Each structure stands twice: as structure tokens, then as C-alpha cells.
Length: 128
Image (cartoon, rainbow, N blue to C red):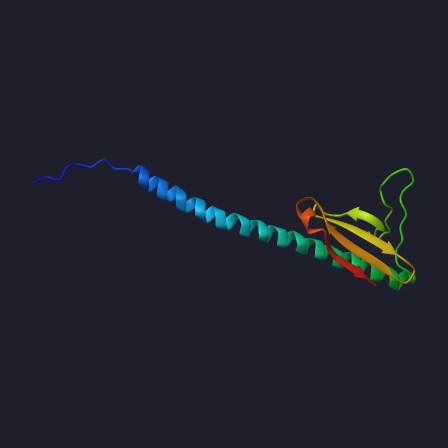
């Protein structure tokens, strides 16, 4: 007795099951991935905040006051010192806006999310 020669390939049911499994995996993985990306962007903002704090403290040690830059006349561009410090509101990344308010012996640094992190609002505020 001979076995009839079966055609090789996938049935429609097998293909639908494979697509369904992929859809379930994608539905679980994509939100987790977006969460990881947002966490990485928040970490980038916090690292930049630490760098700004360090630069402010170094400026204070050298000058006995915190940096208070001025806007260049006629533009929205801020003046900075040689250490790259800024006063006022500025963006150094695509994810965060930094606002530095300085006094002689104090400063406040506020980090707010923009673009992809705009739903975060204020991420961190530091006052010294």
C-alpha cells in the first residue's frame, strides 16, 4: 500500500495561529520597550542635571557667587561662561528643558520633560 504524496506547506489555520502568537508577543513587548526608552531619557536628563550642578558649584568656588548669565541683546540665546554654564531656561537635549535661577549664594535648577517626556511634567527640582 502506498501513501499518497501530500503537498508541502502551511495550512491557513497554522498561519493564523502563528500571526496570533506574534500579535500577543508584540502587544506585551512594545509597551515595555517604550517604558525602557522613557527611563533611559529620564536618566539622561538627570545626568545632565548633575553636570549643571557640578558646574555651578565649581563656578561658585572660583567666583564666590553662582553664575547668572544674561541674554544676548536682541536674541533669545543665552550667554554662557567658559564652563558652559547657562542661566535662565535652555534645552541641552531633545528630552528636557532646564531652568536655572541664581542668586549670590543660592540657585534653583528645575528639569522639565519636553517632546517624548512632555507627559512627565517637572522631573526634578533642586535648590541650594
